[in-house]
Image (cartoon, rainbow, N blue to C red; front, top):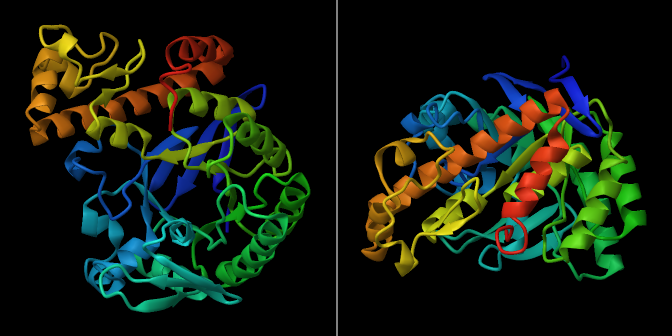
Length: 369
């Protein structure tokens, strides 16, 4: 397969580039809104273009459970099913190991999941994960990995590393398109070295850092993240799974990450928290009842152009669905704006100034995942 990634500019370890997929080129660094079940919660796909969304991520396991790959195939693939014709990443489903409602055990050849609809047990193998992602036509597929939360023993983490390597080799053989491998190892540096060596030796088009943002302290996460990134190929795209707060993202970019995803903007919107260039705003606070200003004077999204804070506050106080939509739309627009500013700052070598600005407004209280 031809190269899928081009670096156009650098600023320290930060890279500005392009990721090429069957559905077009994607500007990097990029943030992917999460569409786990084929939808960004509350946002219809006709809004994606005006929100400047170039790429989203869905979950192969959830889509396999419902509606099922036979339904997706009848539409000709996931792009036609959800009516989004940009690039689509799919997570393998391995992360569902962290969900007790799904996880039922581990085997040498795969994960035992409990299907949430039927309650039946399913052996979820790397072969099945590749088949699902091939069948639905995702642009980039994640290899099946063994996910463990922070605090597990080194012996368990070593087992996760070895099974992730085993499954990755099988997955790469079965995957017919672009695929990313995932480096595991928890917070153990020697295990990260083993995993990075084994996974990057497989012919993947890109690589992800997995097994972090799983309960470990922030300083530990960033330390291991930086250490792991230094073990990965410089000329291939790097993806950190599940990092989404504005400050964490720019700090990840400074360390050399190209791709991010998180429910941070959408989940916070559903809880009434707006992301702005002056910091987060809690729209449920009574003090905002007579605030007739815009959510964000620097924002030109449809929400900010048409409604004031007082009205959106009213919608949340009355539990009106419109409030969820308007704030989700705004938060995603903010994230896309953030990524544009980051890319421009890399080109102009002003990334440190943007970092300082975000530290001021998304420090202690505004940076929780």
